[in-house]
Length: 371
Length: 158
Image 1 (cartoon, helix red, strand yellow):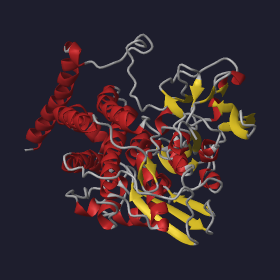
Image 2 (cartoon, rainbow over the protein chains, first blue to last red):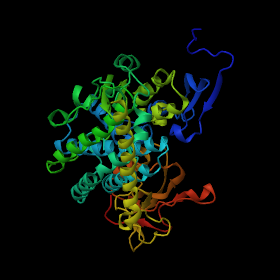
Image 3 (tube, one colour):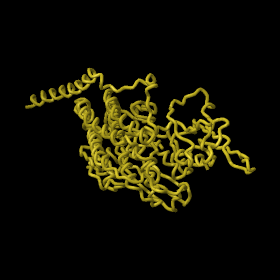
Image 4 (tube, each protein chain N blue to C red):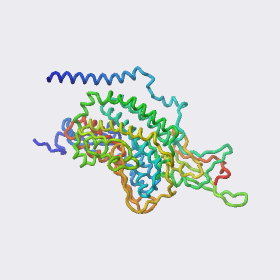
């Protein structure tokens, strides 16, 4: 008998995972149709953490709206702020000083490492290993301390302003980043020893949650999840912004397309971020950290779009301006939303126990999906 | 050949588990590598960086004078309506009316600690303090008046 895919028939079991569930990393609600232990359909329900950030931004000025985007993807808050600042700068045609550009890229890459660290810990915890979480947080705390010292906050930095950064680097910044690089290099082998090489982990990840390159393109999956299937989609390489075109780093690609490939992409991407930080940390140029801007920013009439590569994928900021002090409309193209849309396709026909593993490799941050 | 592969797999599987366990055992015996902080027992030693954004405070000197002219730049810069400035008019000795601040109302419950008000202040009258334990029993306690009673504008600040 040919089973009708995606249709509930008698004998099927419909269960809810979430909205309050530790494995969904937030208030994601999944309605799962099961046939025995095999998944027939996964239906994500959104709206539990909708704060209408896009609508809120319409009543805030171009300086003010940037802080709201820290609350979208809170693990790469800095990169979100970067996208907004870049988009406003594009509209105003501000030339950002070189020192500010270097500071921004340095902070971006540190944020990316911190985000991947947390993902690595949470991913292992999804599979039942609790210890890696603390190992990941040891390195992540070091980055958070650096952020706290220079930006003033650990997660919601709000360090970007149109035209540069809010304050100059802290005098301790360089030495602390170098300490972090040393710590990271001393400890990186533990990641492979504890998790990557583990036989239980490998058996649960390899061949699970397969996503073909065609699916990646048709679902609009970006970031490490897309690169795990061999689709080149790194915005830093394809549409370079700031000083990324001058930097030496590789776009990490894996071709297997399963959960393990996506895992390896993120681990290797951390190494590339370390490489970028190493290139820049001794070569921060002198000069202004902020360009001179008017007290009241007014974007000219028109539409502006800017995309950046966050830790989860491509984030697009689209501003429609009517020439006033506040945007007429703002749209965020968040990476998590598109990545989540592929979850149903990825997990159909697999076992319920593998759902959490596959979902973990997508690195979903729910406030980013549901703005 | 098949049996050889089979035992090779078992060997590598057990080896991978032992490698992981050795890492765990290392931390079990090396107590100096543990970095856990015992908050709130370590409150006295807590050393927050200078730039840490806790809450907005107004700096007063020994003569109970501040630098706030009541220009409302911070009120305009705030995205959440956290700050409300109520002005009054002082009569100077020459008989001229002069704008001065009466009450600087600060709603801590609405504040997101973004620091835009401190950026906007032209006279550096306000700054972000290092405090972060904000919980109180009633909501009313979170609405604060930042300028101290009977404080006045420092001479020379325009």
